[in-house]
Image (cartoon, rainbow, N blue to C red; front, top):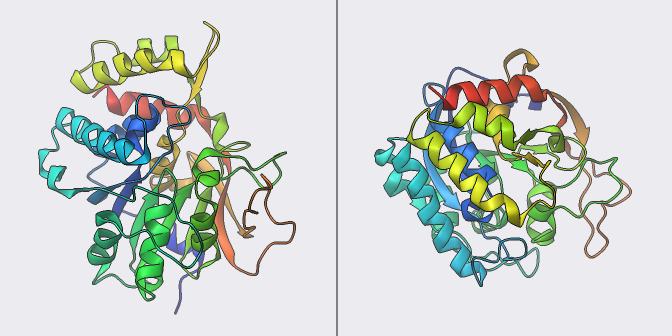
Length: 307
């Protein structure tokens, strides 16, 4: 009997995942990877795929291809600091361009890795692909292998809340075609909307300093990297910063709705060039995060990182 979305995406004692991440773009991917490493007793990490990002906010790279290489190195840095050298061979380069239409995949090592790693999984026991950047690699893999939708389940941090005033969100607007492919496909899909939901997951400079200073090499790196990067993102000394990507890991650990509330809804596809979702939803049901319990998740994040 086919599982409902609530059953499929329910937290479990053990889950196998691939994390698709644009790690060099921001500061939150590093926190997400570090948090993931602190939960390896529950989450079996099958690999990392590098998601593309356009150098819009982050000017330290000059192209999508440069960003992929920088992200790969950044993932490897965090893994090494976290004592996870066994995972270093499982970091795979992703697409160096975004999809030009909904029919043509961008072939990459990452898309092939998703397909290859998914072999042996089933609709009842899928490989979870957790995407925290533009969803190009996942969409491409689905186009490259028509049966992949029966072996994986996708969790994506992307788009704005359906009631938010506009849908111009970085992970989504970089590759609308990829978002439409994944959201419109038959693959089981869970969405963590950014603005209007995950945007509640804000930390501050002083909170970072309190929880991270002097705890261990990983915490020292997260703090120093964050302090170095924050002038590129904020315009006031009294800044707050959303650690967006951490919530996608929290989703896997959401026993008894301790970190977030979820519901099943009909999906709304993003429109091209309109910064909006289509007015009418499709018939596809998706699992949708509607509330973040900021304090509970933030406390678990910081205390685990400090161990």
